[in-house]
Image (tube, rainbow, N blue to C red):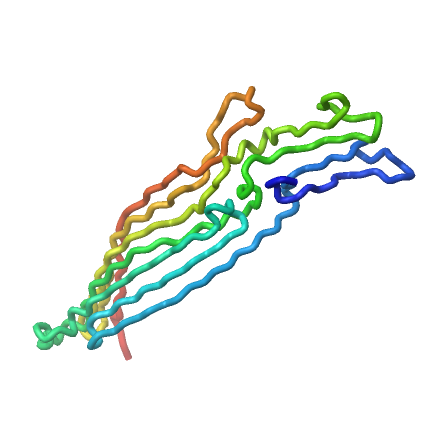
Length: 232
């Protein structure tokens, strides 16, 4: 078995009838209709509030997935957020029209769980064997050989977690006893270490190489406006 997840017998015959629908035994490492994975997560959350004006929150998370290679199985994901309620300061205590003024910021990351289980063990192979005396091609001196999984691609050893890393700054404003509220947010989000399939020469036995290395950057802003025009 080696590093492969398991070996499955596909369409076997019986002792009474050696002919199966495929006329052979096919052993396939990491066959895709069988997926077994485990995910363990540990986390803690710490919050601090000073005088109802200064807020700090720290969220710590550690995730382990069996779908990631052994050397990179665990991912530590910290998140920190802070806020300042400016409207609670003494220099704004006489501003009756200002119901809420809050400045906030946050930064952190969270992992992306792989749905497939064959990324964890490096290269995968197909093995074909026939009944005694009638081995299937490809063989070597009548012994079955391992074939590279051409269509799947070469899974590079040491696949790491993919994760999302994001920073955000926002401002919340409430006016006239919170009858008019709006929020402004600016964010930067990066998807890091995503898996990418790089084409390779077919003579190598694979159509592509799968490895970490793709990052996607998104950034922008959001504006939210809420008004209570008529109240009874």
